[in-house]
Image 1 (tube, rainbow, N blue to C red):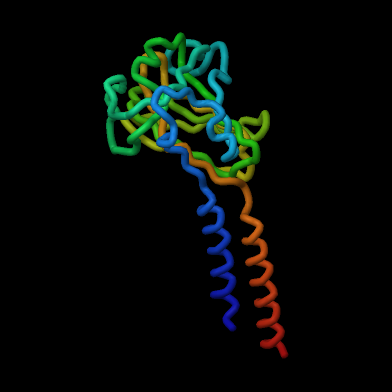
Image 2: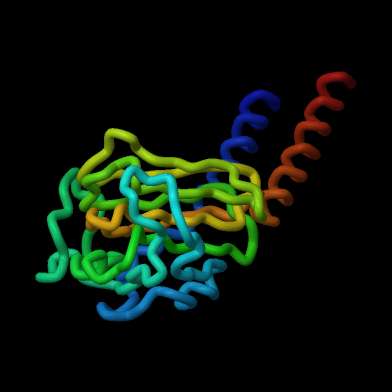
Length: 215
């Protein structure tokens, strides 16, 4: 038995196990007009508006909004502004064009995870002020990173990976900048239990193979 191919296969299985468990929220199962909140609690995430308050460090002088729009809308509907390219979003998305007109500041909302995740990503569309669309990644009360695309306009993906992510706050753009959000994806931290079984079995096989080679 060749040990190196077996070890490579075990490592690949570990990576595939984590990737296979990634959850992506496309909002297609929600009705347009629904307000995003606890609909995905069974999947381990709850959304809430306005976690940030007061002044912020965006390029505009606006404070954080206290009435962030969390409405699910159809991307092709009459209430949605220009999306830009490339085509990353589609179908139902979060945030209506009229939403930011009615907000009283820069929109922000939180994704809180019941169990820590190891990666997070989201697609954004209609971005005109790239530095003002960002994700703030937390492990408990500790800010791990602020991720943004300084020169990004139109559509793009923001993502971050860390061993333990418990909250992500999404800044969905400036007061005068319509931004839609889609395809929120996250993967739980650590491999599945059956992966540990696979790894344990592989280690036993490697040990037996090594004993045969030595004996």
